Picture 1 (cartoon, rainbow, N blue to C red):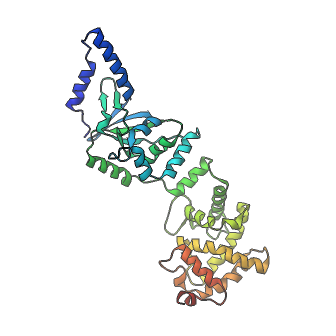
Picture 2 (picture 1 turned 180 degrees about the vertical axis):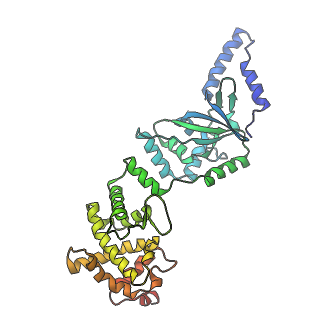
Picture 3 (picture 1 turned 90 degrees about the horizontal axis):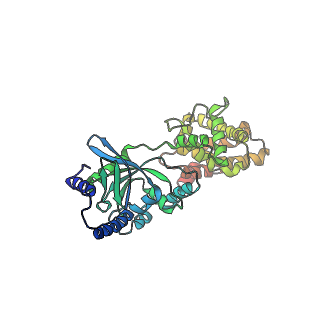
Length: 363
């Protein structure tokens, strides 16, 4: 795969030959060369060998990639392929990131040179040369980044890896290897990175701080039950915690992290007490169940407010929740096969006086 052919050697020899024509022919050749240089791009590259694979590593302007790459070599207009096969919103985000002036795209775009590229590598000089054709390269990895380059008004230098003379089967295998053997960064870790990079929104910062309080305070209902950087069995991840709390963020408008913690922790303690009645307190780490209980908070808090004003204590929450949990069976906490929205709707109905699970499940 990607071995220098006899044609490459002959082309190299032909390029090194000195002209043996008259001055008239020489001037014509010079004009042709200028036109040829406009059609072709040349820059320094490294030839890398990994086992039986060989590829070229170099840096190219993003606007050049935008004008020479396609996601579908069969299309006459590569831009149609970008628009039809890819997520324009994701590409627009990349373009805006680049145009902001602070954007950096350090990961390499992986390409497969197509016949129209007429790609040539000079081993003596380390120069790579290819034709500026809109279908010179098929994108193996980095499709959305290149689509973003198409939409951006700025151009940046981008690391690129180019394979040459791959068969269609080899291109497909390379695509599958890249997209099945690479593991994405866990979303839980990305939340931590967002804080370290100082790119959190105010809403994200609130969620982050509330989670940290639940993970560290000795009176936390979730102490020892949270995982900040990865998904773990028997733990509530930061992503699950944030998604649940976002569903009731209207209840905490302009609140400080400590205020959110104090009220929500009292509610969760009352929930754990109700679950303990069924010997099911460990179920609170079930993702769908935890989200459903979080969504139920506003319904319970309204009843506490009606009875006790702003006194959101564990005792006052238990006063509302104890009858609710007594009406449920252990198998309802949670009911198998139901997502968090369905669970919430069931629990909301069960919370209302005069209703039982049997009544609204089999009515």
